[in-house]
Structures are given as C-alpha cells and as structure tokens.
Image (cartoon, rainbow, N blue to C red; front, side):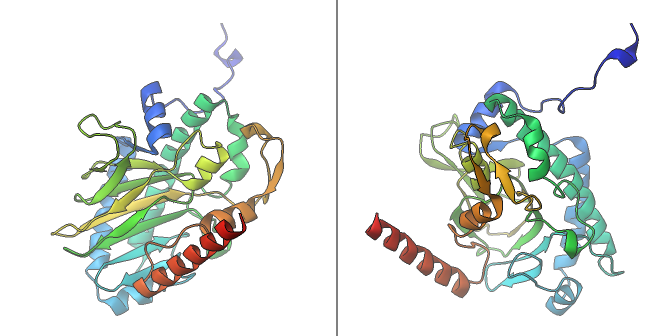
Length: 306
C-alpha cells in the first residue's frame, strides 16, 4: 500500500490517559512530568534567571523596564518577591541570553499545554479546530510588543521566609508551574491526592504541575474546574517558572456553538470580565488591597440588586 495514501492525524498524539484527564478536569490541577526538551530548556532558563536576579535592581529595571502594570518587564514587591514577565522577545545585547532561553522555553511549554488542551477537548467532544483562532499568536513568543497576546512567561524570585501569593485561580486556559523548592500548594477538593482528606492543601514540591484557568472553566461550562492554588513562604526562598497560556484577542468574535452553547460572544468583553473578577496577587500590597476593596464593594452591590 502506498504510504502517501494515509492522511496525517488531525491532532497531536495524546499526553494524558483517561485518569489524568479526569483528575485535571475535576481538581483543576495535575502534577505531570514534562517532555525532555522542556526539561532541558527549563534547566537553561533557571540558570539564566538566577544570574539575572543576582544583579542590582537598577540593572534589572534598565534591561526590562516595568510596563502595563505588572504584565511586562521587571517588577519588585517589597519584602515578598521580584519577578520578570515576558510577553515578547527582547533583542538588546544585555538581554539576549535570557531572552533566547525564555523564547525557547515558551515555544516548548506552549506546545506541551496545547497537547493537553487537545486531550481535554477530545474527552469533552470539543472539535480541535476551535482553538486555532483562540491561540493565534500564543504558541510562539511574539517578536515585538506589537504582536503580543495575553499569554505570558513569568520568572519568580520569592524572598526567603516571606515570599508568598494568596490563594487564587489563574485567568487563562492552562498554566504550567515549576519551582526550585516547596511552597506552591494546590487545593485538593475531592480527596484526589490519596494521602489527603477531601478539602486540604497539597504542596507540590518541585514537581511540575498544570493548572486550569477561569477561561477554560467558562468555555467548558464548568466541566473543567479552575485550579485553586497559593504560594506559602519557604525559609530558604524559591524560584519558579510560570507559563500561562491565555486566549488570543486577535479574533474578538467567538462562536460558542462548538462548546455546546448556540450563541456568539465578544471575547474581549469576556476576557475583561474574567480579569476584572479577581485581584492581582502579584501586585504591590497597597495596589492589591485596593483591588480587593473594589471587588468586595462590587460583589456587595451585585448581591444587593440580585
């Protein structure tokens, strides 16, 4: 038989087995060993990241100026942590090695999460082509600020004994988190961790973990749950790499029929609504507290008129 008579597969080979899909959908989190190319890229990125965070604050701010609030560049939270957010490539001489390592990791992490998204979609009978416009420009690190999408790569340096993040769920589709020490904890809602009772925090240690975000929960009509998680202080400090796969907004009109809902929505408005429903756990304390206050007031008003 002529090999050319075979059509290529319509989607990448599965990564998750049935039990893993069920675990991820019901708990919103899944510890998972990444492929070798992603692990190799992680080692290089962490080494570059450690070298970067050892530099002076002025040097870090000069190389990667803070922009778009906390969404781009270097950001420092007093007595808690510092982090660097990539949403596009940087081409300066001083940033080249770190930017190159970040770009390579982004591309591999995006491919990894896309395959997991395909596994979830297959289980939910969601046609895979629906993700093409939703991920337009997200699967490779953009070359410039003009090509950015909400997807981002973030490198964290949590300070010893104080570095933390309050409990929250992410806003996008899927997030890959990898830390150098214990501190990241996920909520175990249904006794899925065999050594824990239902309703307990589980520290993932240094094991890579995939988290479901609010946008995927919304698109799946709650069939996939967003993963609640937090970061608690580590006496020795910790660093982590976080890649958040979020929706592209290049195609603002979204047909929900493939997701089982016969309607068309404004994706930009949906995304703004999801982002506006949470406070930024990585902002300065004063900014974070003000966002909390506004959210609480908004929720109180909605309840009053409900």
